[in-house]
Image 1 (cartoon, helix red, strand yellow):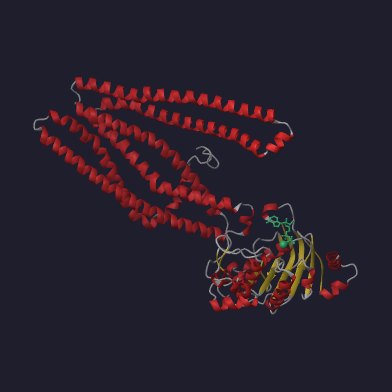
Image 2 (tube, rainbow, N blue to C red):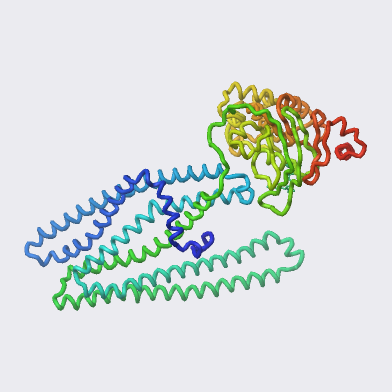
Length: 593
Ligand SMILES: Nc1ncnc2c1ncn2[C@@H]1O[C@H](COP(=O)(O)OP(=O)(O)OP(=O)(O)O)[C@@H](O)[C@H]1O
Ligand SMILES: [Mg+2]
């Protein structure tokens, strides 16, 4: 109960969070007509349930009236009509509320997903994706329950309490006040007591689980236990834990026993007290027995509703907590993106790059500077190879070029314009990346290649696959391009995945190409093949290629050596190989050894 995220302390409903929560009303607004109609049915069915005890009371009184057969018939028919009415209005209430809630939630889900897509990479750096995903879905489920059940419960109970008390006042003010003086106190006490007991039994369960862990560990590590002759130690550990379980559970037994005594004394005592007082009033001629009967029924309705209110209150608090977290997400700063079809960019980009004094550290690790002042100019159409030891910042450099993170200081210009001043979605259409670890989405191979440009035709997809030397293995699958890959389909090998990613890049036909270890997962035969494909892909566009296997970077126009976030060497491959105490030469010699 109390272990929902951040506990219930933080989410005491205050005005600010209530106001923020009400901003979610805009998702219901389009369906407010339906919602109002649902409310009407809710009122009707609640009002109908209030009429029951009244008529039941009259039914009790009926035998003492003159033509009692007619009377009984009449009331029974009325009650049946009432039931019919209630059944009818409950049906429509549920249907209408579910309708509004589901439509509003679909809109909310869509808005949340849209928001997530717009958040910058910096947002994702510091979070576990699975956690984020489950949090959002549980928050939305919470709201779903609130809209479909909790809200209706709340209103129904309110009507029963207010309406019930009003009706009782008509019957007898004296008896009503008497009932109100005892019943609510006892009901609320019972609710709180019940909650305490539930919490306590959770504690017992947790202790039992602890003791089971001991057994489990011991059985799994039996060899270790025996090797160290620690049987006695384990036995003592288990004995202490199980004795503790017994002590806690016995104490819990006392609480449970007290609870049932309390129910007997308190709740049934209250009923006895009300009937006792009522009988006195009957004796005085203030009320009749039918009225007392309906009085007792109303009282139990009211008692039930008061008890229910406590639950509803807890649920609403939880819902406010969920809303808060969702609204926090909505307040995160987003990238400037237009979310639209990924088609061919309107204007071409030359692809000239310029890094000017770029310093950068990841938002998640501010204190560690990854790039320490990079100055780099790449002409349009040039092929530049980035080399350097692991962790030197090569991938980071390409992340910045993609506009994933803002730089700490310095500038990155593409065609002499800072990338921050481009529209990001338009700008990224000019870039293609074959990343270090290729992620394929669950779907067909064709869909995965088409990810490069979603409006491409199947012919274009096939042509791209052919250029990437992927056609061969794709056509070997019985389903060809329709082969489903990923978790629920064929698992592609690392090299196959890389070739799908290369096909994506071919399809995108970008101005700037980034290859991050694009052939690292290939054997030397396939690598030679794919290397040819890549050279074709690189020609005529600006390319940044990262490679550990230095033999593959010899075709580059220029090689850049990165070392701990600094650019330490730059020049054409032939020249760097010759340079007597050059860094590239040192790296090369190390690899050849
Ligand atoms: N998302 C991140 N958050 C914080 N630090 C990061 C993040 N990604 C990378 N780093 C750190 O930045 C440094 C540079 O990483 P980068 O991935 O750019 O190296 P690399 O040169 O591509 O290495 P490799 O050749 O192994 O791929 C490393 O020290 C790494 O730990
Ligand atoms: Mg890398």
